[in-house]
Length: 247
Image (cartoon, rainbow, N blue to C red; front, side, top):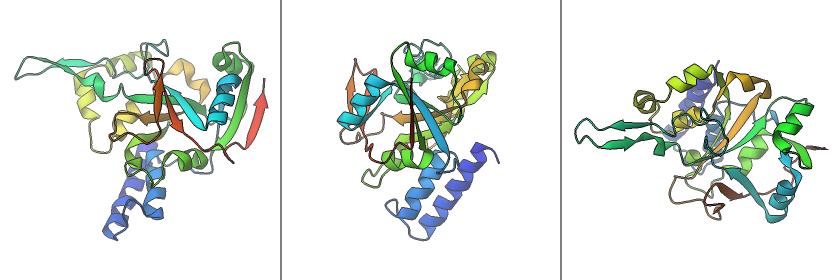
């Protein structure tokens, strides 16, 4: 079963719970939304991330998780978040439509489900600074970002196993027809479009955390800095980290 089939499976169970009178605040619904928004990833699945230690220590000390905006200019790759610069022309008014605005509000953090680490991982993510690699689980991450205290939890946070594609196929995504094909009520297909990466990076086995900052009202306590290039989400680090490796 692929991840989109897993998504539909979880979505179907959410409909069943709704029919049974279970509202969004019920534990059953919350768990199904976590499964849905991670496209069926097992809550116990281990994920790992290398942080620059200075940034990691500050996040832990302050009780936040910091995410950069998912932008091709920030990540210095024109094929990152491929729909962000798509425009079109309204057939009635003749005015330009900014389709990219639908995905430019995503902030992202790269994790991996690859258990081993190698020197290229450290050099790619530490940028020459002292670094730390932490291990946690899918469930622990979503437990902290999707809670019933936020009535819009099911629309803000996504954890997606990255799709690796040929650069030509990613470039072909940059057209209005593709954007419109990704527009649906859950927001899942737009989130999935921001988790498409060129095949040359497939060795990273990336699992991408996405947070949609366009959902209003905003999550309480969220803040921005560097001209909104980074977002900070209140985050409970207690019991989150299962293992640590420093470099």
